Image (cartoon, rainbow, N blue to C red; front, side, top):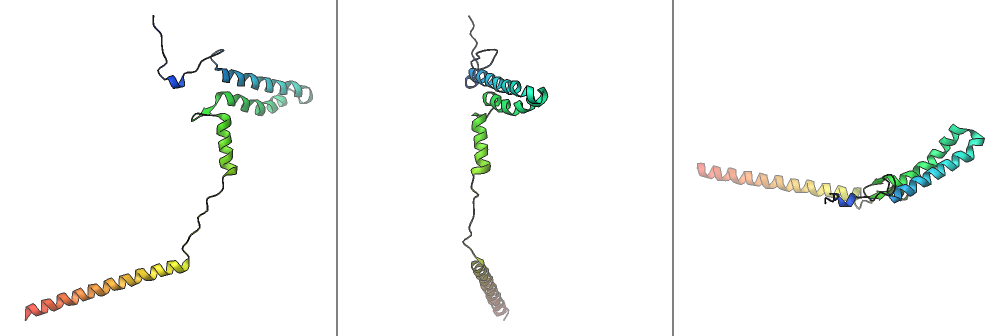
Length: 137
């Protein structure tokens, strides 16, 4: 007797009817009922085509709730996070602790350090010239 086991057990889904999982079946029935109800209610007043155009934006999110998943999140969880990112996020504000005065001071210190290095280099040159001059005598 051979029993086949799905290699990727994490992705295994039990099908209930026609290859659909229970969640998919519930959401697809709910979207059909919502969309069909809207079409039947509006058909008399605005006709078939416009009533379908009104029903699609209502039925599509319901159907996506059962079928769509991204990074392990369902449609409603994903859209909720996306809406929070768009509207509920506060902007991150950086407040500098360095004003113009502080930056000027830093530049002055750097310039002073360069001057000191030049003086040291000049002294070394003088010392080396003096040593060379003494050797020549």
